[in-house]
Structure formats: structure tokens, C-alpha cells
Length: 98
Image (tube, rainbow, N blue to C red; front, side, top):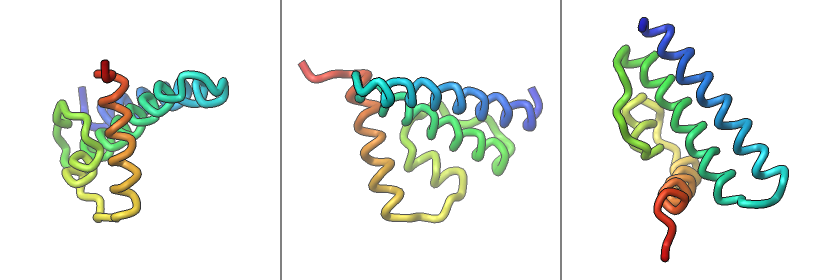
């Protein structure tokens, strides 16, 4: 797969995950899943950016802050705090507290 095809691939997955997230949020139920899919959408957009900028396959990680840093985005404390919240919901949806 070419770099351009990889970017399109990640962007298409991100758009699909965003639609799922919107569905949960619009129904007003299972909001943690809405945030989980929102996280996945952002993650995949960051991976598309990383592929475009670094010309390499993105790492198999889910941490938005690390992905943004690897993609070369400037640090923004407000955005980092929001991504920390999304990271929390990613973990919480995968590994709920018992």
C-alpha cells in the first residue's frame, strides 16, 4: 500500500468511527462508548497525519498525546488535557472497573 493509500485508509476509518460516536451521543445512551469511538476517530486521524508526515507505518499504540508528538504537532496544553480525557475513556471502555 502506498503512503497516499495509507493516509486515505486511516482517514476513512476515522470518519466511520466518528459516525458511530455521533450515533451514541445523539441517542444519549452509552455515552462512554461515544467517547470511546471519538477517541478511535482522533487516533486514526493522528495516524493518518503521522503516515503523511513521517512516511512510515504508525505505531500500534492508542495514546493520543504520544501519537500527536510523533506526528510533529506542536504541544498545546489545552488540547493535551482533552486528549488525556479521551485516553481515559479508551481504557475505561476496554477495561471497565469491576
